[in-house]
Amino acid sequence: MSSSPPTGGSQAQLGGYTPAGTQTNSLAVVSLVTGVGSFLGHIVPFIGGGTLALIAIVTGFMARSQINRTGEQGRWMANVGILIGVIHLAGLFLFLLFLLFLVFVLGIALFGAATHSGSAPTPSPMPTG
Image (cartoon, rainbow, N blue to C red; front, side):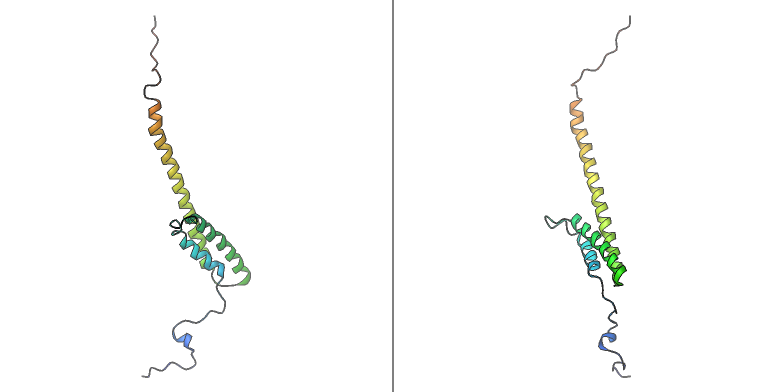
């Protein structure tokens, strides 16, 4: 047995990688990267994960439109970027609803009980007779 490469194959094909005939859409890559990066975006001040998730959604739809016209690769990247962005924005929305609910409930518990603790006289029944 010899360890020489098979004849007729290029160096790229030996490693199992063959370059695709069409290129990957750049906006699809941007959509995927910003979708994944949106979870880390809350660490960076003034950018925020919500902004990055919105960018992932917009660039994902733009990429899908371009892919339909040009036939480029990357539809799955655009779809995953859109999906991650939508999931992230839905999570942020639910978190904000939870915070508003928490503030409302704590406000009622703290200040609602204080305003009704002995400030108004209790009604007494009228004597009949």
